[in-house]
Length: 303
Image 1 (cartoon, rainbow, N blue to C red):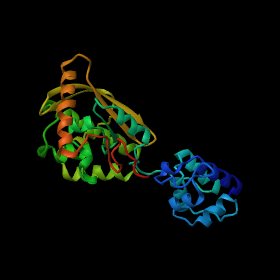
Image 2: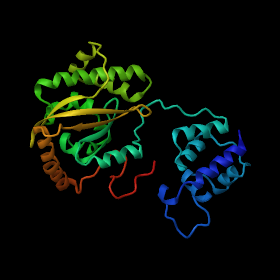
Image 3: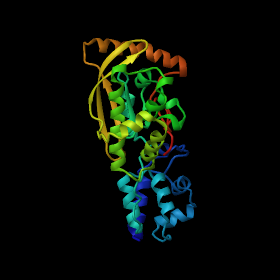
């Protein structure tokens, strides 16, 4: 355990954080920048004396649970978290599953796409965040219960209960892409419980899925052109851009219409009509992120 380097690293990480960045009130004027030691201890769930001894290079060896709490309290990046573990002589944690946390920068991107449908999903179909235009186009998926936000599950189990958003002649193509994508994800991360349990559930509950799964097709989602059938504005042909975030197995899906096209006019109509409907249904439209507060004009939920 490198006590001196650990102490210096903790002090520097603490000094760069302000109280408002971690959801604390600033309080009286501070003599030095950054958080106080007792504030870090509070955020990490440890005693102030224990944390003080760590910064003074005289504390005991922290447990893995304590290191995880410190990394969260100090808002460390993945690289910084790994470094913290190494300083103590511990092997950093390796994520077995897909992260459900949407990075703040990605949420800010959604914030600015006010006239373009965009959403963040995992590579196995879990919708993590939507902007208002995406909710107007395909429905407010983030308003569903946590276990009902997977677009692949919904495609195979709820298709008869929900209005179709794709032309009927293209349903099979979408179904095969869903199945082929899940097979690729499961092969890449066989120990990830999310996609593994979804495949098992659909094999048992959907004859259509099981039949296509037996064909052993493999594919990864790429940028393409999609047609959407909206009950108010009609059919739109939209360019679908898939931006990858390999660290978290997340995709930012953005749909745009070619300028001057009929689809562009209908997308603009959706922005006016669809967002009005959303506003009447749940208040002012905003980016919706599962597990986060709305994005406009507020503080996000702590990690």
